[in-house]
Image (cartoon, rainbow, N blue to C red; front, side, top):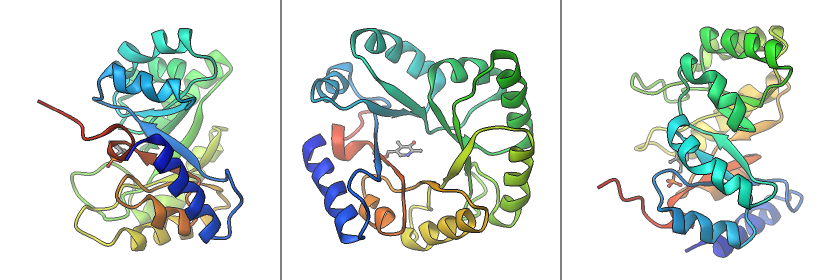
Length: 217
Ligand SMILES: *Cc1c(COP(=O)(O)O)cnc(C)c1O
């Protein structure tokens, strides 16, 4: 695979779903990948990336951002409140807002600095104990809480359980977004981004299908 094939598949999925060309943002999730692979994707003109750890992103992206114009990096992994300030400085979007304490910290920092990345509330659609995100039954109340803090809430994000049919989770997320008047839907990864696009994803997070398998060794 690789970037150009994934771009083509995203475009085809948009067409198949009757959606406008370019309506889906392809986030190239570069966590753990060797810098040379990331740079190759930058050289092909791609500018939207995702990372799941604040420190790893801080080690990698300031240098690339100096050398390539228009780079946007989104945080797609969990955020501890004590890293919120650093995260707000580096990322143009945070996909993992999942608890009042974090939202309050972001709101305080937004007031202090006069800016805030686009925010997505993460919903634990599979109600998995080990996974971050608000439970579906608590989503409406939490979304309201975040909005009442004047934060720039753009949409919702989910990571379906590995052993379940992802489309059920994508539909559930889309339903919660719709009833709350939210347009952003961050859903779909290497194995299922086309299904996510069919169900309304505005942001797909694709790692290994673009860069190759991650080597955690
Ligand atoms: C790593 C990661 C991805 C990308 O996963 P692939 O299966 O490699 O496409 C997407 N979303 C999140 C939150 C991730 O941590």
